[in-house]
Structure formats: C-alpha cells, structure tokens
Amino acid sequence: MTAAEHRRVLLVVNPRSAQAWAALPDVVGPLTSAGVTVAITDEDRDALQSVDDAMPGLDTMIVVPADDDAAAGCELVVVLGGDGTMLRAAERARQHGVPLFGVNLGHVGFLAEAEVGDLSTVVAAILDRRWVVEERMTLDVRLFDGTALVVRTWALNEIAVEKRAPERMVDVIVGVDGRPLSSWGCDGVVCATPTGSTAYAFSAGGPVVWPEVAAMMVVPLSAHALFARPLVVAPTSVVALELGDRSTAVLTADGRRVFDVDGRYRIEVRQGDEPIRFARLSRAPFTDRLVAKFELPVAGWRGSGAARVPRA
Image (cartoon, rainbow, N blue to C red; front, side):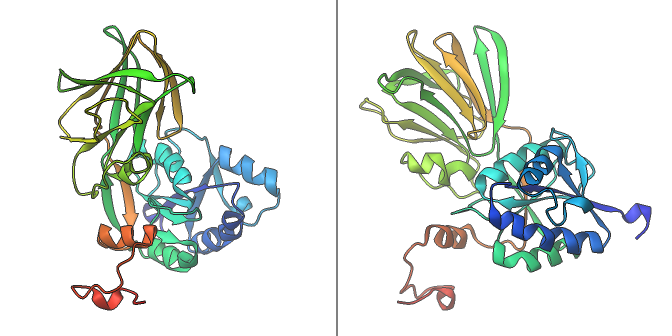
C-alpha cells in the first residue's frame, strides 16, 4: 500500500458495553493487518483503559483528540454501540462529512447498519470499500435573547424543550414561517427530523416519517389545548418556540447538548445545511428496517417480498 493509498478510519465505542470490548479485536485486528490505520479518541481510549488497561487492540490504534476534527482524514467512522453511541459519533463525523458505519450493540439500534453477529461482513465491506452512502437531514437550532444570537447548535434526531420543574407546566407559543400558530400549556415540545421520528417524537405520539421525506415534525408533550396534534412542516420552514414569562425549561439537542431557557429566549429550528452521512451495506427499504426493529406483525402478507416474511 503506497502513501497515496493510505487508509484511515475512526473507531467510536460504547466503553460501558461488554459486547463492545469483545468486538474490539475482531474489528481492529483485521483492519490493521490489512494496512488500515484505526484511530480512537482520547476520550474513548481513557474510558476503555479504565476497564482494562491491556484491552486487546488498544495498543495498535492511534489516539486523536475528542473534538470536531477527530474524523479528519478518515474514510469512515466505525461505531460499536447503540443509538446513543451513534449520536456521539455523529458529533465527530459531521465537521468533515465522514460516513458513519454502525454496528448495533444496544437494544433497538435504529441508526446502526449491522448487528454484532455481522462483524465479519462489516469488516470485509470496509476492506473492499463496499458500502453505499445515505444522507440524513439535520436540524439547525438557534437560541436568541431578543435579537442577539446566544447559542447555535444542531441535531440529527431532535431537539426537545421540556419543563424544568416536574410540578409546573411550561407555556409555549409556536410559530411557523414568521406567523404565530398556537400556544400550549404543556410538558414541552419536540422538533424532530425524519431520522428522529422513530425516537423521542415517536414515544410522544408523533408519526413515523420515511428518511427520504424532507420534513420537520413538531410534537407537543402532554399539551392542555384543543389544538395540540403533531405537525409535519416543510423543510424550508422555520419553527419558532417562545416561552411564557414565568416558564423555565431545558433545551436538549439529541439528548447530548443541554441549555437552560426561559421567557427571555426565542428558539428557532430549521433544516441544517450539513447532513449526516450513513454507510449502508445496501439500499434496503426502510420498511424492512421498521419491521425488523419494531418486530411488527406481518405474517400472512402475500404481496411483493412475501417469501421473506416469517409465517406463524
């Protein structure tokens, strides 16, 4: 392998998962043996060393800072973990547009491409450069104090504005495209992407939206109002959330970036300019992923693909 052909991947691991510890050498060993440099952030290295200082595979990886440039020069970010680890890996990959290749070690694992039993297939696909890239919409989130922009962040799944005090609702005025829509006394509001439609927004009663659909979901949480249905708005829209003067809340982006908000602030949510890229083994229909992850009852289907449907 010449210098021009040098290959590099970033590994992001759930350090609390025994499955991840066991899978580590099965990923790192074949890749490094084939001349692929495997990098790991100092954050993950330290967490793994706290479990086992001699964990197999750690000594063959290079260590990079856990920042937005962690994936610089990499062709993939390989993730061993569940959806939480995938969201953390997205923070590392986003700046340089590097695709995420996820191996699910969690429960549902909607964001990952493969299961832990597919490790050999994943490694072979990486070595052969045999993957397709799928882009997912993100959210651009801006927090204003008056006219001053005080916070700007982003989300792959959703942002949630939730009450801080369990005993008190928050008052939220919702606007779309510069026009007021409605006000809710509620536990909070979720704004989600199609990717996030199977996460928090789904639990709150929002619709499942296919990833190919460009749209934003607005889902109220336990709203006391006549008009409090989930909304699906255009990707060109700007959703604004304003809190009542006496309301205090917490704004979270993907459950990872947290900001305190109150009646002084205005939150604006729009489609992000930078999508997150996923590496997939094939362009399988989202319907199949939905059925598999939620274990939906489809026995008896006689149409296209009936041979793949398990029968009772």
